[in-house]
Length: 426
Ligand SMILES: NC(=O)c1ccc[n+]([C@@H]2O[C@H](COP(=O)([O-])OP(=O)(O)OC[C@H]3O[C@@H](n4cnc5c(N)ncnc54)[C@H](O)[C@@H]3O)[C@@H](O)[C@H]2O)c1
Image 1 (cartoon, helix red, strand yellow):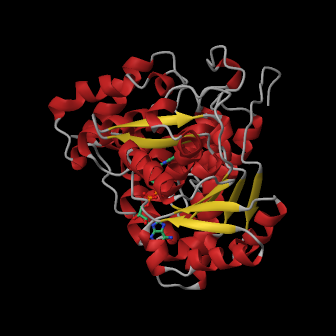
Image 2: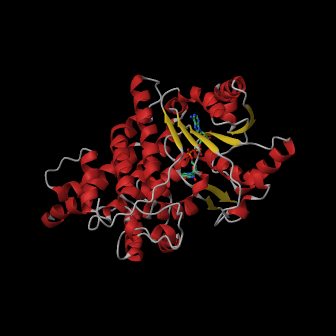
Image 3: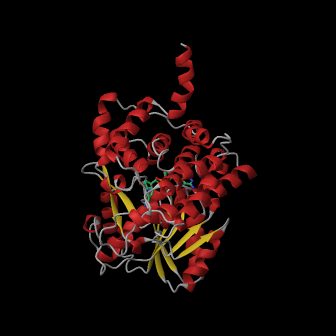
């Protein structure tokens, strides 16, 4: 903490975490005075789990009527949101006094967007950019079933624009959930790929926001209520705890044997994901996500995968400006070199090994990107200016270019340092 620190912190109004916490929701809905809500989910949850039916009947016993929309899908598009808005208007489900999201980041983001479009009866594009303060927003209860995106604590909903296959965001602090209910038991049914991708997403959120631009230097224009605002002592506290939990649980969390160790690891990652979101949901992100968006545009690989491949190379490029923080992360990952510089240099290689062990490609070349695409990729990444501006280095363009080339070739300083003596011998 320093005298320049500026705390801008915004979080869900209520955070409830615990195994089996879902059973507390019906009484809470009644206590909050809700009468008529909508569950937004997808067919996996209506067809393969008892959770939707349990919630509907539990709410009914507390005098709350819930209807269900189970048309959610991975990476929801603006078209899906508009179709759902029209279908729910036609079904006569309105008016509603709350929306409940059950699912991964995709269902939560769809539900967030519906909190805007259902009362307005307007297409979601109306709300991209800035949301007028007079716009009504339905309260959201978010119940994540993956441990990764942290959408249950953030101000944004991310949707795919099918016209140009890019992601667009609707963003406002009023979209942060009224209740974020984290029941780690929801994650027990996640397949290994979903668990690994989500878990790496959580780790990336924690690490990236731990290292991002300080709040005191963050450019927030004239916005008195910014969604993202740079790191401060409070966000860093959450980030550190999240990184500690990821170091302990991420590798073991994608086991599927139902054992106590698996449950322990998935519970640890559920907490890590929320803490990461309490950090990045106010501090914001930078180069890993900025470059990962451009990689996803070229390869259509998942959000978790594109972040994962970039993470070690971005950390390697921050050694001169974030030395102390990188040493803290290295120690949390049990990098035990006595010499601090050696530990900092080893950290990106340790994370790359972890990422590879989770079945994710560790170079951009292995993602199918050609060397000839690298300049365009760098340009596209730099075009996401809100993320590039938060990268805490004096020469953002040059560093992005270097990071992209290193990530393509799989080159880390640690490898170079190890190769150097051999080169000298040769
Ligand atoms: N709004 C934000 O702040 C934010 C942040 C990061 C990512 N996102 C978005 O989140 C999305 C990714 O979300 P995600 O990684 O949680 O995956 P997801 O929501 O896309 O789900 C992936 C698949 O896993 C299934 N699934 C989810 N939970 C399951 C469970 N418990 N058991 C079995 N199957 C389950 C889903 O049905 C789906 O088929 C992306 O669209 C990304 O853009 C949003």
